[in-house]
Image (cartoon, rainbow, N blue to C red; front, top):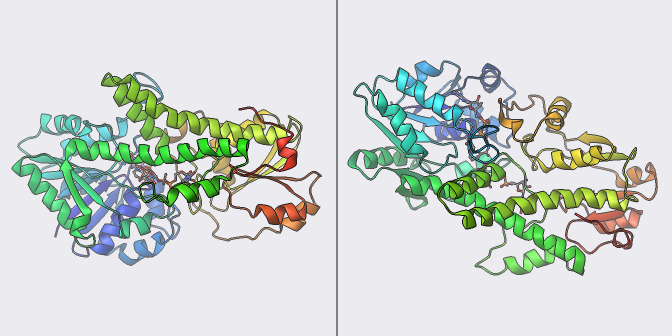
Amino acid sequence: MVKICCIGAGYVGGPTMAVIAIKCPAIEVVVVDISKPRIDAWNSDTLPIYEPGLDDVVKACRGKNLFFSTDVEKHVAEADIIFVSVNTPTKTRGLGAGKAADLTYWESAARMIADVSKSDKIVVEKSTVPVKTAEAIEKILTHNSKGINYQILSNPEFLAEGTAIEDLFKPDRVLIGGRETPGGQKAVQALKEVYAHWVPEENIITTNLWSAELSKLAANAFLAQRISSVNAMSALCEATGANVSEVSYAIGKDSRIGPKFLNASVGFGGSCFQKDILNLVYICECNGLPEVANYWKQVIKINDYQKSRFVNRVVSSMFNTVSGKKIAVLGFAFKKDTGDTRETPAIDVCKGLVGDKAQVSIYDPQVTEDQIQRDLAMNKFDWDHPMHLQPTSPTAVKQKLDYQKIFDNMQKPAFVFDGRNVVDAEKLREIGFIVYSIGKPLDGWLKDMPAVA
Ligand SMILES: NC(=O)C1=CN([C@@H]2O[C@H](COP(=O)(O)OP(=O)(O)OC[C@H]3O[C@@H](n4cnc5c(N)ncnc54)[C@H](O)[C@@H]3O)[C@@H](O)[C@H]2O)C=CC1
Ligand SMILES: O=C(O)[C@H]1O[C@H](OP(=O)(O)OP(=O)(O)OC[C@H]2O[C@@H](n3ccc(=O)[nH]c3=O)[C@H](O)[C@@H]2O)[C@H](O)[C@@H](O)[C@@H]1O
């Protein structure tokens, strides 16, 4: 029986391994982590992360061929294939602080693999890492190899939170990079066979190691760039009377552009887009490519601009001050169907409003009060140092808001600021609200109260 061990039971390690286990009943999959609370939660009825469909997959194979354990060394020693899916946050201090990826967790996992292994291993980079990380890992593993053969593969993950199970069941592609040696190619084949249990062969792409590592950073950079592009357009729409949804639809009809990922928003969030672009910027700088670095930096700058533009719009609409005013924030996670708050734009928006002394009340059905308090107290880039444990008691209750009742209870004029373009603005205007929707023609009131970013 092939044995797989995955180091890191987070948003990637947990769902990815659960799907491998359910699709490959003949493979034993053990997910290990140094965090006991996280492993305990994976072994309980309340999983440590909320992800639609995840519960069913875990329950179907846990205890059969899927296991969660803190006995990291034992399971690493026994495995044939080791996935490393630990966090790779942005460095907070030292060389490359605020940009480079912090590989501390990765390095300690690699050293532990080197220490405990007694048989040949395929080590798979699942975490998103800088290009050439495999070379560094190879050095650590082979330095004291005691005759053990290690093959390093890059197999980046492309799942998005909120749709992880769907994405894993039907990935657009699986990417596997390996050394172009007979040993490297044999390892690529072994991993390909795992995915071939459910992914059509033509969707499994194999490349050299560096292409696979770079493709992951490039994919996230391109995706984030689309959002910054449409968000940049949203500002121009507001200034000109164009409607960003109509513009997105019109350009998305061009098959070369495509319709997906063109929703204007208060800005992108999540643990990866910003981190991975900063990492890409740092790699470009280290390779003497400042023009390329500056090109990608703009994606982050527009994202920051969009968040502060939103806060300024709120403040300027209310006579340039929100001091003492009651503001309800609905939704705090970085997107729907997740409880993950890492780098959520809501943090910047709430901090901006609180900075102007607003009285802010925050609600998200998937995020606990404790988590929100911690997030708002944290410094930039600290959110992934140490581990960011998710709330274990989210409610799945979907509540319908009674906007008429809300309006009746509010001081007038009553405002709604929609950072996601999800409310029915016309209906709310009929009730009497002044509504701001990103990138949409402005209400008369808002036109008279120009916001400066
Ligand atoms: N969250 C996402 O949607 C995606 C994340 N990624 C990448 O996957 C990687 C992991 O991300 P997440 O799962 O979100 O992180 P996470 O923070 O949720 O999980 C990482 C886990 O690794 C554990 N860990 C750290 N060092 C360890 C060690 N030495 N031994 C055992 N366990 C250790 C931590 O305790 C933590 O539970 C990152 O590189 C990220 O960029 C890639 C695609 C999607
Ligand atoms: O490397 C990663 O971590 C992952 O990053 C993203 O996935 P994720 O961040 O989970 O979620 P997305 O759906 O990409 O959303 C990211 C942010 O962009 C925002 N967004 C997305 C789409 C859009 O049109 N507009 C927009 O503002 C979302 O609200 C959210 O804040 C990528 O989509 C995944 O392919 C990748 O594997």
